[in-house]
Structures are given as structure tokens and as C-alpha cells.
Length: 310
Image (cartoon, rainbow, N blue to C red; front, side, top):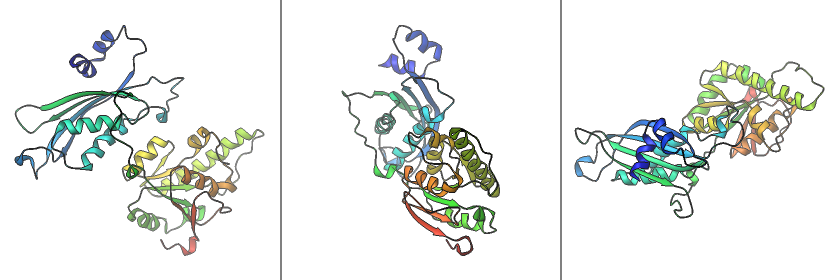
């Protein structure tokens, strides 16, 4: 155990030498010197005050099969590690670093790619040096995780479809102000701009063109308010929802990766946004104006542009 923990945090050359005879070694990702201030400790002097806690975490993950394709949705994101830390520190006040380390390790091991996790946790303000613990935990039937995914882990975003008239409206900033004030994760969806799109003879090529037309309009909306960021991956959308970033959905990647994706035609833009809302567990979708028939997979609340009072 001590040698394994040492190697987890050692230089890659040391780990390579130590695992040279190991068949099919795991890949590793790491978060180093991640320092947060939190109230923790069993002593009375540690109550009512915060102190710096430093996390160093290495996660062994299954090697990817096939090309990575520079695709963030295919890997275990570093955000999952830092979110595990934040979640467990926010859940309740704890006395022991050992408890924090155990819970963080268990939550990381809920991720399907994670096979083993090394956690080094240190208090930086309790003496002249760092006081800490180090643990290593692995997934497997011999050690079932006591942590279960909690219902409050799931986020239910506010999905808003913006028609072209809404995007161009002088009231756009005010609507975004009101939606942001709701305090829920906010994602905007759009259709294509009001201009003829190129036409292709093959339906797959046309699908790409239709999706790109929607993405061009997403950038138009983002350009009208700097709070809006164009996002195209599930990983970044999840991060944005948890960190208060307003997203504008660029649909190509998620639609093309879907086993049975929806139509991407401009006339079906509301239905496409509705499909997306359903995949992200939105309980309803607000439509400001409409560019097409309101056929949807979630509850719709439609507001004409000239009557929009949010």
C-alpha cells in the first residue's frame, strides 16, 4: 500500500518503471494542489473558523477503446473530481480528514471510467507543516461503494427556445436578466436564421448543413449578450449548469452522436429543442416566439414575442 500511494503521486517515469511488467495498466488523470477553505476538525478551536485543505488526487481509468477523437465526452473530466470534492464538503460539516477522503474517493468511483483512486488530503494551517492522510480505494464487488447517486445530483435546467424575432428583440437583455434571476441552470436553444440554406443531394450532408445553420444562429445569440456561451458537449453543458454559466446549445455533436437522433430541419427546430430538453430532464421548455409547429417531448410554455412578460 505505501509503495502504491508513493507511485500514484510520483513522477511518471517512476510509475512507468514500476508497472513495466503489469499487463494492461490503467491510464491516470490527476488533480494537484487543489486548495479550498472549509470548516473541518474535531477540536473546539477548529469550530467556527475555516482552514485551508489541499487535495491531491490521482484516478486510474480504463484505457479508451478506439480513437479518442479529441472528444471530451469520451473521457473522465477533471471537473468530476473537483465536483466530488465540492459536493462532499458541502454535504455536512465533518471532523476527520479520513471521512472526507473516504467519501470523495467513493463518489469518484461512481464514474464508470474510474477503476482506482488515490487521495492525499492535507491541512495547511494546523502547524508548521502539512498534516494529512493518504488513501487508495478501488471499485469491485469486494468493496461496494456506500455512496449512491443522489436525486439532488440531477439538475433540471430551464430550457428556453428563442425565435429569430426574439433574438433580434430590443428586450433580449431584459428577458435574460429575468431568466437568470430564477436561479436555475439556463440553456437557450435556437433555430436557423431567416435566410436560405445550401441544399445537398444526400440526406446526411443536408443534415450536417441544417445543424450548422442552427449553430451559426447560436453564435448570433451569444454575440448579443456576453453572458451566453455556445456549448456543444454534454460534459461542458453539465459543468455550465453546475457553475452558473448560461449556455446556448450547438446541436451537431449531441444530435449526431445520438443512436436515433431527431430531425435537424429548420421547420422542426422547436421539436429538436424539445428532444434536447427531454434528454436533459428539463421539466418544461419556454418558447419565446415560434418558428414552426409546437410539437414537443416536454411541457411547452409559448409566449409571443410582443407579449413576452417573464
